[in-house]
Image (tube, rainbow, N blue to C red; front, side, top):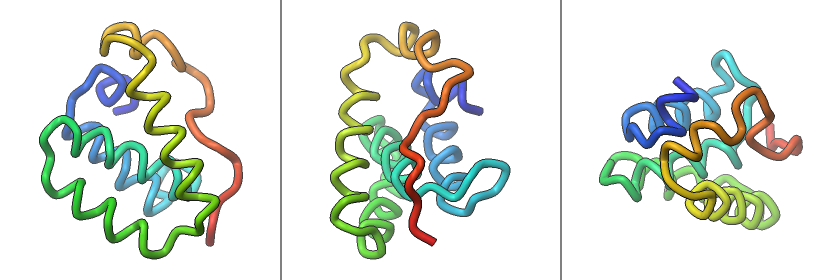
Amino acid sequence: MGLAARQGYRMAEAGLGMLYQAGKGVPLDYVSAYAWYARAAEDGDNASGLRMKSLAKIMTAKQMDQARRFTASLSASGSRAEQAKVGEGTSQGPEEKKN
């Protein structure tokens, strides 16, 4: 799913956000969840925009700042094909999480 998300498939982006938000198969990570929801919303997924707003209500100011920076790095890292190559096999988000 991560590769499909990095290639710009909005349902995969939204799905990855849900996995990070729930900690299912990946570490619980609100920052990464928010960033993937933002990416999906940017690609036209309205439900992800709503999930972002809901998640923002429970995130700390520091987490929101990290999420915005992570979202910007996803958007600024070039074309979707280039983004698929960048980050493969690496951690996609900060270590700090809110439980």
